Image (cartoon, rainbow, N blue to C red; front, side, top):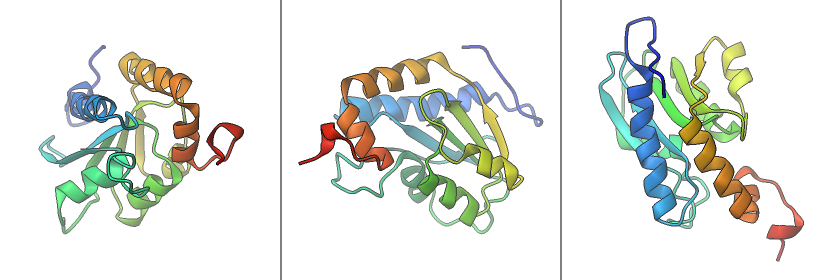
Length: 162
């Protein structure tokens, strides 16, 4: 993966590595491989997490919400950076909007686009790295687990009806 920096010189690919490792952990646990991390403006890790909706039997534990919770209370989120392996869904986009997180770095958006355009329209800095590791992990997971993937994004299909 090539290195990419933001305006302050932070290597975004290094930040993505943290989220990617969380996604790999989630996959190894039998969950949906989406990882995220919340960073301060200087690149200091505040919290990291992964989609654990399967592991915890809790549909609200997405990668971004897990990282957000792990970061604990912050007085101001406007200079924080949410890094996620996959474009945030509407639920996580709402969290980013609600708390005024200033920037979002997306590992890949070919598998899913969610609310990324909406966030950009709101003035939130959105950077898409198009990381091949993230894309391969997610596309392989979707191909192997279409029912679980559709459940995660709120799509009811034949493969996940009971």
